[in-house]
Length: 604
Image 1 (cartoon, one colour):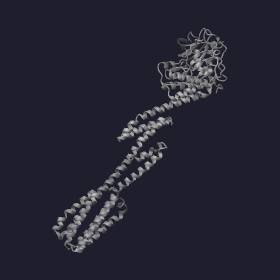
Image 2 (tube, rainbow, N blue to C red):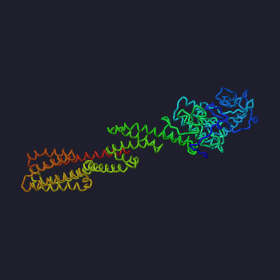
Image 3 (cartoon, helix red, strand yellow):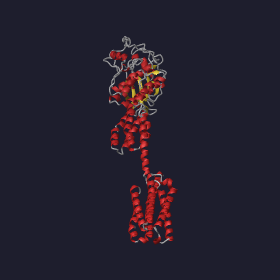
Image 4 (cartoon, helix red, strand yellow):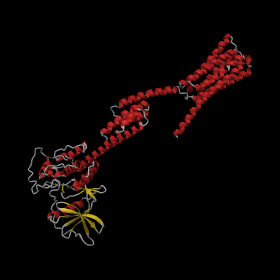
């Protein structure tokens, strides 16, 4: 780091620095293109032929400066196009020595962003000739005259930084950075050109004004000031300033005013064409005091790369934010596309935060998209989706959402418990088994009675005894499956209904026995009790049980018509009613079986 410090009130006499510099010298051209003085004797250089069979055939002029010219040439030996750099005929020995020094500098800087040197020799007149790669492209400044593009300019700038960082690692300062000295090839390759003002970084001082006034750092203006890598950092900042604004960092109506402006080096107020973050980076790079600048080209480049990353993150966040109004509308209308819109917004904001974790637009957008989406998911009852998104919430609002999720889960569990309580599919197979067992026991009992006595001999007391056996058959049918069939309210209602019907029938028969009612009257009462019971159960639980009431109702006229045969007719109707009940239970059990098969097929 330079030890040169600035005093804000410091003034100096510019006249010594301008000694030997024409007052009308252009402020956008290089002053005192001088390298370390070398022996101008080029006799030891190999001879290069510009005519003959094995010659470099000189072509059109590519460019020229105060000391030299660059021509296109054809290498007839290697069959390639090269560039020839020579001093002007009128240039003195110092210019020749400078060209040799520049050639040796370029040869030492083997880097993809620095033009390779092919050879160094002397022409027929003894003047040195530098043979270099011909870059097919144009100067950065020419590109800028046709229009500026921030992303393109930053890409070119970072390539220049790579070249300059390499030069600094070799102990060399460039001292003349500007868009004119950067070439951009036809395929996007970037070259830092014109090392004619370069000097060793070790012990460098301003002995005379060297470089281009519009881009100079303050320490380049006053003789005796130390130079260092931070000097090139300023030049880099001034170069990027020119590329982004189209205006030079140092300005004035003539050479003296431009150099005084370079000495002042005040901060610049940028317009909308330069992002605010990049403006801060540029003003730091071009700080008046070298100690306030970036300590190295690498640090400056990293600052610019941060800006590029931040811009990329902001662009992603802006794209994601553009979908937020559509997401809000879809959520309000409970539209199916809301999930897809949420995924798009969330992906955009998360991608932006991966690039720049502190991107304010992405943070704000992510919070907003969750603020819109989560309440809707909570209302829809999709609690697992809400839970999966909790880690993305701001820690400040996370406890509130955890509380809301717990409350929603409690409500959902209560609802699910209620649905299961009335779900007739639960224990459907077990109810079918109870029906089969009860039907088998009752059928066996009735067949036994039929063989024991003829129907006309069965009295009310016998019917009461059969009622006791019926109650026992129903209870015995329930007991083996009691844990499952009594697990839900719906199933309990069905089993309780069956027991209540048999108990009511038993009570009716007991009353008939006590008052001396004839058997057919007691059986008519049974038909009404069981028929009404099946109808009530069909209204509150299994609707198909209504079919069981049909044979019980239809048999009543037969019981009244043939009272003596009533004990033989009634069992037929009772078995039909039980059979229809069993069909209802079997139908529900089959639904459960089919549902299980579909679930298994889906899981496979």
